[in-house]
Image 1 (spheres, rainbow, N blue to C red):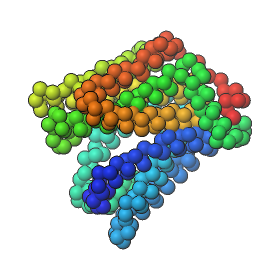
Image 2 (cartoon, rainbow, N blue to C red):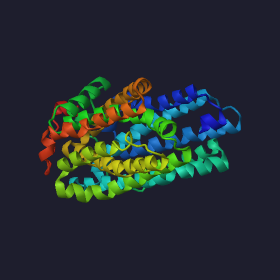
Image 3 (cartoon, rainbow, N blue to C red):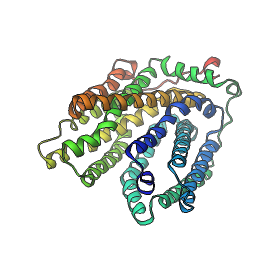
Length: 386
């Protein structure tokens, strides 16, 4: 919004801004895994919060002094995105320090519910703040939220153990190799890695085409489309609430497969939407509600499985490998999806994307995860832990 409203950025410039916020998932994901595993996670989380707050506070300062240009905004966007990747990786590795293995699914479900509430209210609040205060000043308030986050993290009293001595040695090349080795070397982790790759690839088709399809082909207005997308936040909240009891009843492996299959199934409602604006909007809302519920449950189960099956000292490097491959797949998927959408049309390309989303649960169905109910954690040998 700052780029478009305050700087009157052209579409190509906005595209570069979006691209530069996605690139750190690949670069930082590869390089930061070892840092997360060799550092206490809470100080890393607090540092990422403070650094993001400082960077974002620079935007309104530059705007008020009439020095804000697109180049500065690109730098801030890239740095904040990179710090967010580090925060997310450290957050994933920190949770098993705070709760026991049997509590991980419930903890991830509660975190998912928190994110869902933010998804419901955040965009509407952002729009109101931009209208009332201008986009750069709204960014200043966003910076304050990172300071609040850091303050909350400072209240955690659980003592975090020091990283194992054997995890101190190593370099970024061995970190990357170990992250991918652990991600692909076990029959229970490998399908999750393949699923992350395929979901990143085909999910990016929707990123490239969903809004164009809804507005240009279905005739939805930006307001009705915004309302439709907000339903996805409610779906995510439902998925987070049901994930723990559903997973406890079926077992994590089977629940993961069912959630992935339902996510792919309900995504079909999107390319099948049509027959008038009202019918199209109802189908898109159904896809958002039920698909996001299943998708959120899938993410909760996948996170819990990785945190439960892998030793804590390697979670950072594994998260780096997952983040990097998902980021690369998303970049490729957005480019391929956009090209196919131009050649074949949005609806056929979205149907291809729906079929591609079914690969994720298929990888898991063809693995030992389909029978996994009681988890035996992997042992980290000296080679793996670094």
